[in-house]
Structure formats: C-alpha cells, structure tokens
Length: 245
Image (tube, rainbow, N blue to C red; front, top):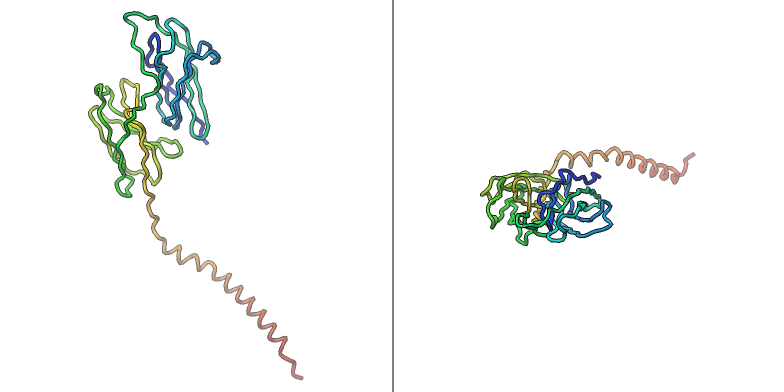
C-alpha cells in the first residue's frame, strides 16, 4: 500500500488575524490545519478540518490568530485507508494596521454547488460542466482532477479561463470522483463540491476457443475413470460366472 506524502507545503495568504496554507499529496486524502504557539501542538489556538479527499489542499483559519505572535501551522492529510502525513510550518502574524492584508475565509473552498456530470454510453466518456466564478475568472484557468476509488489520480486536465466544460474519455469501468479547481496564480480552490461518476464495465467478449477447450481438458480423465469402472464391473461379472470343468 502506498503511504500518503505531503509536498509543496506553503503559506499562500497571511493576515494579522488569519492564515491560509496550501499543499499537495500523492494520493487522495483529507485536510486538517492545527495552529499552535508551540512546535509540538500543545497550545492550540485554531483547528480546521475538511473531509474532502483530494490531491491539492487549500485551507485557512479565518479569524483566530493575533497580530505579531509567532505560530506553528501543522498540516495533516489522511487517506481513506488510514495512512497519514503531517508537516509543520512556522509563521508570524503581521501587525494590524490600515495596510494589513484582509482576513481569508475560514476552512477550505468547498462550495455547496455540485458539478454537472454525465456518462455517455459505455465508452468511458464523462462530460463535466461547472458554473463561472462570481468574482471573475482565475488567472491560470481551471484544473480538473479525476480520482479512482482507491484514491489514485487517473486524469488531470487544465483549461483556459472562460472554459466551463470538458469531456474526458478512455476511462475504464468503475467509480470515480471529479473535482474542479480555479487556479489563481498557483493557488487552487474548488469551484464546486466533488461529484461521483460511475462508468459501466464493458462486457468481455466471449472466447469460443476457451469454451471448447475447457471440456476437452477433462476428456482424458473421464475416459480413464470409465476404464477403471468398466474393469471393476467386468471383474465382478467374471466372479459370478461359475467355472465350467
């Protein structure tokens, strides 16, 4: 079993009262953020968790930290099999003031809207449609991830700003999760709640040779058993026939 690993962990937004972090995992896992004033996490000031299993993670505290204080942000990801990875990033909240950056919303970007998905026949073709962002188009467009039931990334596509639909083909039969992200200067956030699609499994072609071959394999054994049975019957019959002298 492949263990979860964290890469590219970084602070993407920092205000006097909030912090936002982003990281990647090698397989689908959830996201947790624990902010404390000590590196071991004993003095916790904020905890945020999301249950979405994905490979790109963006999560924030919202309000909850104080200006000018040193903190330690522990990011944690756990996959559905229980494998877990964690990493600690220290930071100092900037002082409050008129030029201080605004607070970022708490939690992760998991909108209540869902993606529109449809499966076309048994060809492994999935149609994915999402709504434009209310606040404007992301600078780097959109990222679409398709993850299988084991948490592995099967397909990842990127499309330009202004694109709100994509078709993905060639998927094998099975269940998949679809996630669409807006990419704003390298920081990706979901534009809708994940969707689940099921691709029907294709019927295997009938191998007539195998159908014929299987009975043939047993013919020698059947003939041998019949021979033994015939000899046994013959022996009994011979014993019952009286000897003529």
